[in-house]
Length: 348
Image (cartoon, rainbow, N blue to C red; front, side):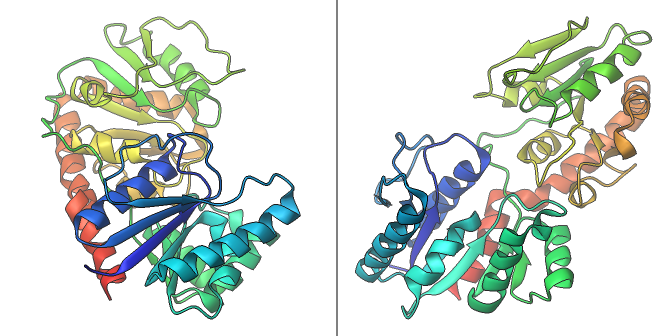
């Protein structure tokens, strides 16, 4: 048996991206022979994503009073860590605030793994304190991209920071799109934050010239988001088998106002789709090479967003060239490639 690793997150019941990646990492490291234990703050429901047999799961207290909750969490976590005696504790997000005092004096390495770092988030006092604690007491600070890593390293002189991106999670054999269907695809929550309103404004421009193309939206419409009735727009709430949508589309669009390292871009690339994206943050250029495997639109300019999609619509050669580059660049996100990086740091 290899090393014992604890993964500590606030929640493992949700169907969100952080929970998905936590369970994936647990399963893959377990498959590679590591002893894996999951710890979560509260048991809100069952674990949404499939979990390997043999992975132990623990939950801390159900106390709702904030200050008392924090103190009890630390006490119970310390008690668990003493019992488990792990080699490594990987705290996800701000769980490091609990892990550090709970593990004080114990013989285990402390890793801090962050999924949701955005430009400017570390200017907040809470995250400044968190980063100072990580810089001084964590053995590794793991982020999702080189851009995030460079930002934290330069701003806080944190030399323990490193990047490991999320992997492609589609396990079935992928057949790249032939880029012949006249469909532009969007996958994600349908809301203002994700820029769906910008996309629909751009589509009004597009449909005047390319009425034979359609826009496929795949995702849940968020409450209070007003979805305009725009022709040639198809909405599908199903997100379980999203692969079929990638394979039958010719362009992928991500019009978000804020993102970190969106898995949907990795998935779209694996199907060889050229990407049209807004410049949603420091990681946009990490994932998309402007004018190579897609286009990055500055300043959330709706007119330019429409223009870039229309360039790809009218020029099949450009579409296929960018699609081929997109497919090639997806290789660095292959599951085995990413898990080898994890094994290198947890195997030490």
